[in-house]
Amino acid sequence: MPKNRDYTGQERTPSSMAWLIGQRAKLRGQLDRYRVQEAALPEKIRILENELASLDAVIPLHKVKVDASAIIGKRPHRPRSAPHGELKRSLVRSLKAAKGQPVTTIELVLQFVRQNNIDLTKVKQADIMDSARKCLSPMADRGVVLRCHPVETTQHGSWAWVEEDSGS
Image (cartoon, helix red, strand yellow):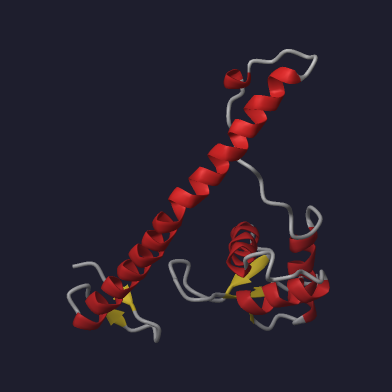
């Protein structure tokens, strides 16, 4: 039977009642969130349809003739929270400053947010956390950063800079 680890690192079997309750709570929370989003969708769709109809009415009036129905949709991109590469530079600076001591992902992200004056009301902290993990994991795979937590953890991990051996 597959094993899972709880927050203390102890192994738990999936048949454990606490694990089952936790899984159900997570799924129910996700379902509740989707239902709230679903309830808001009709109004959001109506607004977007009105804006699209307005553009479709104006486009034919322009001297450059374009068939508005031929314009395909594209997904909008979120603006960057900081200049390209700044997150990685910040993570490396913070880990080097810790002098080999483990630093949690949340601490690294909060340092990045402070250093770059990022407004967390405009940017999701979870998105920055994901970006930080996606940046740190390959560095750990290359041996530049030490992963101080199990790879399969669902908890916040901690990381340390691998000190270069200057004695050789």
